[in-house]
Image (tube, rainbow, N blue to C red; front, side):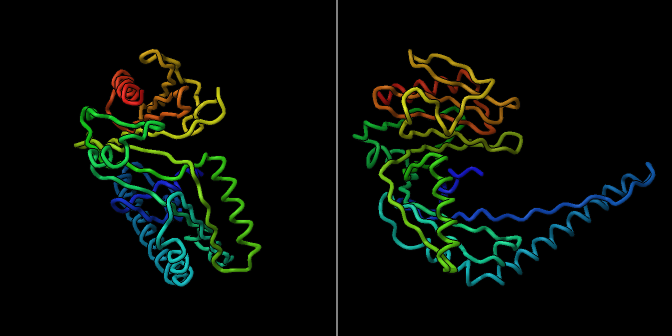
Length: 291
């Protein structure tokens, strides 16, 4: 499970309150027997129809489960709603075995204080200006991308998130309460700039993200983008960076640490169109702005 996702919900401008519970329902169907080659077109149609029926049945069952546990889900939603203080992270654990055994059962929900800017100039004016410790600016739009949002949120490492989540579940089970709520206060922050492709390519809209976060112990790699066997150590304007791309080029990243400020920089592109050289050039832009 990627625990970082618990802090990445986006639903409004300026102060954001979003809930992530991670429940999903998946169904599929396969033919029970193979017929002759002449009947293959009919088989394909039948399989499609059966799969559609199965999906509809699964969806209907999920809706029934939602109604059955509406009171619990409403209580969890209420616990995660309301005003958040800067740096606040909140968990709500549903301590109900029947609910957890259901197809929609997800034992926890989480939410945190986030500051959202939908306009780049507003972000720079109201937040980035003067924030030299974690400077994150990109003054030139990446080719084929539009600015989507800037987000400032509490920061925790993946291992910290996992540890806290296990703690919440253990405390929730021992509490005897149907809804167990735990609030934390985090001083560290991460800053993220999100860009999306101006127009889809082959039906796919790529996403480009720039993120800064506090670096861990000196000399260690960036936890959120670990080094892979195919990773390359390169130099951009004298700064050592790690470039990684998967085999299908659907996820590419450039990461580095500013030794002077002890801040990690993570640049990622998912299902986008930028080349390795273009990503490295963008990294150079961020380095220049963060000096």
